[in-house]
View 1 (cartoon, one colour):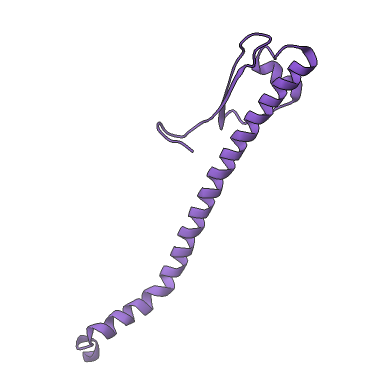
View 2 (cartoon, one colour):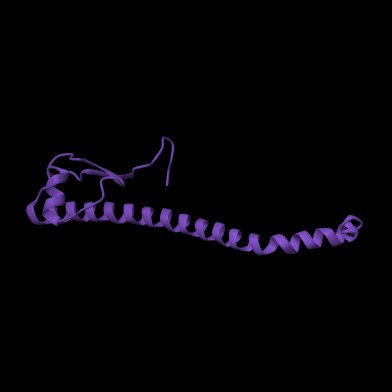
Length: 118
């Protein structure tokens, strides 16, 4: 008992580190794992957004090549090429500019809070 009272600071510090190290390692591994999962999730969402936008634009161009005019609406484009997307993840904006002008197509990610971005 008296040994711990008069124990040198350096020895006490290393004893505490030895006791806390086994608990700190799993916590650190969990933090690194969660950071990696979060980064992968954001990267996947950005790739999904890019793929959806490319599919919509390619469908519009293909419709123009086959019929001589661009699709009149987003629903026509989605039905003609069986394109599906998660409406809870993305907002798709389709603005036709006439039968012979390429439509404005935008795919925007939905966010959980105001000001959030991917």
